[in-house]
Length: 128
Ligand SMILES: [Zn+2]
Ligand SMILES: [Zn+2]
Image (cartoon, rainbow, N blue to C red; front, side):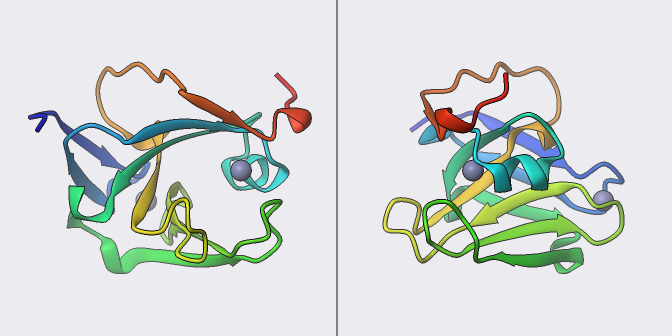
């Protein structure tokens, strides 16, 4: 078991959390909905088991947006800070691949880290 501990927050720090241990997988997603919600050219996602995540503050300030128009056809819950609008995390219990995982937006992690994607999704839609 790894002893790694990540901390993260939204832009305004209303939402703060820690994550214990390493991600199961690092995903770069080029689908149009990930681009929309990130406001960027792709989304960098780290998947952790739910039990690895502990909120320090602000969990009740998350606003959930049900994404029912995913390219995969499943319903993804995308959660934003209701104060600053940061795209903080997502879950997708309707997908057998990510059920039980929390999908952390890599850009919300604090400090120095290197994002090394182990898989890229929807490369046909990539713009970088
Ligand atoms: Zn915030
Ligand atoms: Zn995507």
